Image (cartoon, rainbow, N blue to C red; front, side, top):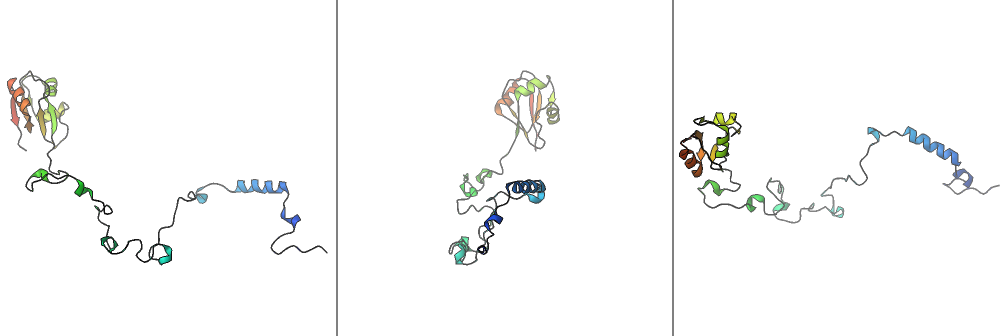
Length: 191
C-alpha cells in the first residue's frame, strides 16, 4: 500500500501537468481574454482611497481629524474663503497700494485705471489725404482704433505734413502741436 499524501497536497505525479497541455491552455486563455472597456483598470498605485478622518486615534487622523488643536483653523467652516492661502499672506495683502483714500489709484490692482488705444501721427500721415476730417468711424475703416468703446488718444510718434482735422478723446502735447503746426485742428470728443 502506498503512503498517503499529506493533506492539502496532491501526489507528486499529479502536480505536474504535461508541458504541451500547459502551452495549449495558455494560448486558449490569451485568445479568449480580449482587451476592451470591460477589462480596463487604473495603473497600480495611481488611485488611493480617500482619507477617512475622525475614525479613532489608531488611524492616524482621529481625535482632531488632522486640524490640530484650537485656533481658527480647527473651527467648523474655516479655510473655505476664496482668498485663504493656508495662512500665507494672501495676494490681496501682498500687492502694493498707492496711498490716499480719495485717489482712484489708491486701491490695489488699480481697477479704475483709464485705458486708451493709441494712434500715431505716422499712421494719420500714411492713411489720410490733406484736408480730410478724421473721425473715429473713418479711422476704423482705415484699420486704426479698432476696439469699440475704448477711447482713442493721438500720440506724437512720426511727422504730419498735411492739414487734418482730427477728432479724438485725447491728444498728447507733441501730437497737438504737430497737427496745428501743419495747419490742421484737434477736436476733443467728450465721452
